[in-house]
Image (tube, rainbow, N blue to C red; front, side):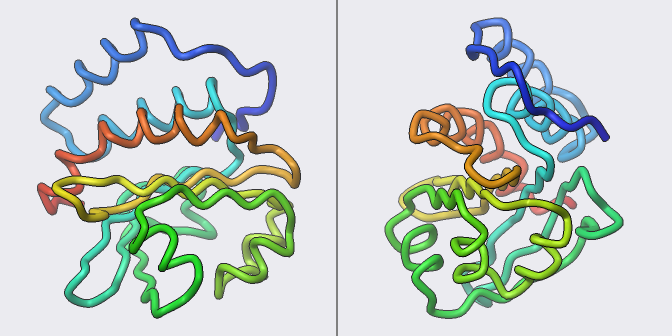
Length: 170
């Protein structure tokens, strides 16, 4: 899998057309996820990219896409209890941006696996529909990578996941 680092580029109208076209493909969610993986990599940057569907009835996430299946296989599940991260992302529906390994350590139970991959910053984008979080688009990179402006681009890109997260196909 490619690692998207530098240089970053601006999001373009052509990118939105590519996303709209990907939504029309029959092979969902892989089609839209692959395009989002590439575009988020080129515009924001990441070394690890995952998409998780959230089931509010069980407080459980299911991974529907990953660029690193050896460490984070598709289909993997995570329970999220009452944490500061869950309050921010699921409750307030705000992006979680952590730029240091200590941010990852305090927010994720699987912090050892994340840090062992050389990842030290994270951008968790809540995907919101009808006033609730239906999933997240997650980008991880080396420490210090993410900027406040990445949150806005990530939220725009993540909105293209709404149909596949609601569809229930994995």
